[in-house]
Amino acid sequence: MLGRVAAYKAVARGRTIGFKAAGGVKTLDQVEQYLRLAARLLCDGNLEKVDMNNFRFGASSLLAGLRADADGNGSAKKVESAGY
Image (cartoon, rainbow, N blue to C red; front, side, top):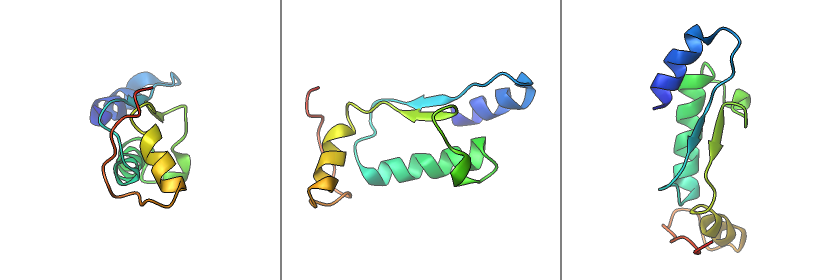
């Protein structure tokens, strides 16, 4: 899907479009993978250019993982949705 967004952006001429990864993103490792892919496909490889205008996450499944990482429980383990 990111490839299609990138292809459309090439011809959109000023129209801002982006991608929202929703569902299935539960760990910080997955976040990193998506961010690097978005940077490569949407921002000429520049991670600094990835922002809310071109890429976002659906955070309901990610919330438990962020909390676990903040508590020092590690970011690599898969965590289930907190049900929010």
